[in-house]
Image: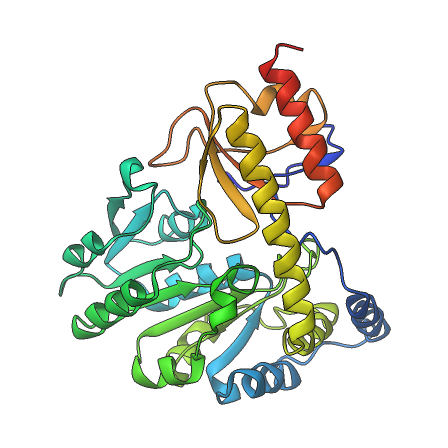
Amino acid sequence: MDHGGDIYRNRIEHDFSVSLNPAGIPTKMYDAINEGVARAGSYPDILQVSVRECIGAHEGINRECVFAGNGASELILAITRALEPENVLLTEPGFSGYRYALNGLHNCNIETYYLKKDDDFILTSDILERINKNTDLIFLCDPWNPTGKNIDEDLLLAIIEKADRNDTFVVLDQSFFHLSKSCLKGFDVRSMLKRYKKLIILRSMTKLFALPGIRTGYVMADETIMKRIRNELAEWNLSAISQEVIKAGISLISESSFLDSSLGLIKKGREYLESELRSLGIRVYDSDTNFILIESKHELYEKLITKKILIRDLSKHPGLKKGFYRIAIKDQGSNRMLIESIREIINGH
């Protein structure tokens, strides 16, 4: 898999391969971590009652429709095992974790739909033609990974509607939702789950609260589907620390000031990086979140590693090729440092 964050096999001082909230870890999270540590001498609640009630109250859904996981990746694996799809529509380039989870299934046929470079790798209505009665499952990512673009609101609804008519499961991965422009519009989880019984919504807190070392995520779906997903998860899959972090995270999400501040920092950093990179002759694909997809004729990955800077190399990613990279948006000082380092590489220094 081509995940970022591999600081263990490289001498790295600046990691742009992992896309975290540039605002950093909120103070409230340290309090939550300490609370979790204080409970480390006891087993965490195997039923996650307080966690699920917290999420359910925030989203307006029953706690039986929610379960938390040790990161979104664990939940993706559990979802695929629970559904055991025979025919899956997978869009590339996309998040590598979907294919990884599907490859572990027996008798699973993956139909790949490739986004077009001429469309800037943006999902279009062409995908609707690929959904039919034989499609058991489709993965959607909003905002899309690795482009960072939110799915057009009308198109997203059209895809879910088409899937519903064909009795197709839809996994809507919103791991970066709260760090994207769509967060400003909101998403009515309650009405969507009530209307579409085969819709599964996935959220991550890792990125939003800049805590990749504490794995946190949750899934929301119809109660009957949730029972199947829970059966594929280990008992006590969530640590005491993760449980406290999730509850504190939901509280922060409810505070508009936290999200507004984060989105403001991301917008400022994104606009700066996009402008500077384009001035250096690098192709930048439009993004709505805290990472951007770029294409360069210059070898950036290896040369930046020599400067102890890590970015995401996407040269082996399905649907992409050599020269494609994904770069996180960080604080302004780090962003400027990255641009100067890339400028030196392009100028031959």
